[in-house]
Amino acid sequence: MVKWIAVALGCLLVFTNGFWLYSAIDLVATQKYRQQVRYEAENRTEALVSLCNKLVSGMPKSEAEALLDSLSSDFGIFEKEGRLHTVWLSFKLDETGHVAKEGACE
Image (cartoon, rainbow, N blue to C red; front, side, top):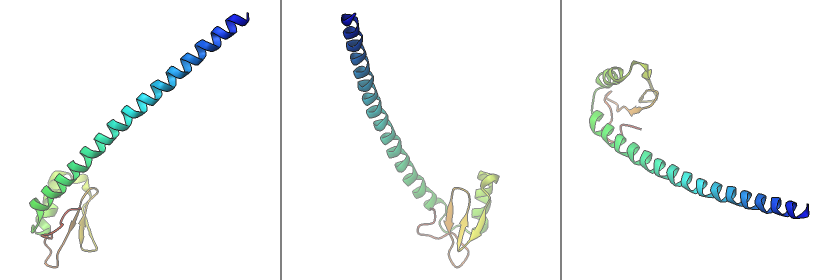
């Protein structure tokens, strides 16, 4: 009987150590995957902001609103504190009512 208890405890020890090893490897793999996704998202965002600045800088407010409305009518375009806001984008407006030349998109 004692022999079976020792064998059962030994098997349980091997099983739990294997589980913890699997969990550690899975955690490392998940961390690397999330790190890569975050890196790609940051670079994608940087590229899109640069593209946005080149496309809309100097555009009149009415044209910017029309462009945003053509992209999606769900954006909910509004102006507040010298900026043209949507759900996802914010365009800085200059004093003439045009989208700013520098740092237009945020």
